[in-house]
Image (cartoon, rainbow, N blue to C red):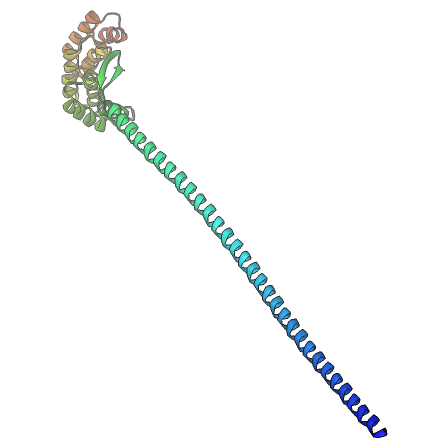
Length: 251
């Protein structure tokens, strides 16, 4: 009987041992499964985090790219605006230059057109160059450069034979010749002036100048006759008054 009890105890102990071993095996398998699940979850979480990080980086890169693109677009707009402004300015500059060129052309053309001038009480049309040459010759005379003035007025008369200035030019030419003691030439030019314009404002002075030349040439008879003609032709002139005084001294 005792032997039977011992055998049952042994069997029971073996059964308990097997049950214990089975429980330990099941427990071991549960731990492995949990570790596997945890490891899987960790990998999934890591992959999720990596994916989120890549997405965040890609989003940031996309935003930077979009911002760069927007900046480039704004820069291109600015460049286009500047180019448009430069083109408009260039167009305006070209237009202004064309208008200025036309104005200059018109001004030059107008400056070469004859204009009305008045000299010694006489009005006539004269070219700008013609007027400038006469004024230059007169300026030389007034500067006391009588030899040069003689040349200048003689050249003027040759250059402009139909000029309205010619009567005055002959008068000043005669005076320049008188100043350089070319009395005969002076008389000839004074007479040419009187023949061209007997009603000239300086005609009485021209007659008086002829008498002065004749006096210098010691031709008293001719001078007296010239002075008498002066007082008859221009009795109210200052030159006639001076002629009367000279005439009284000649007698």
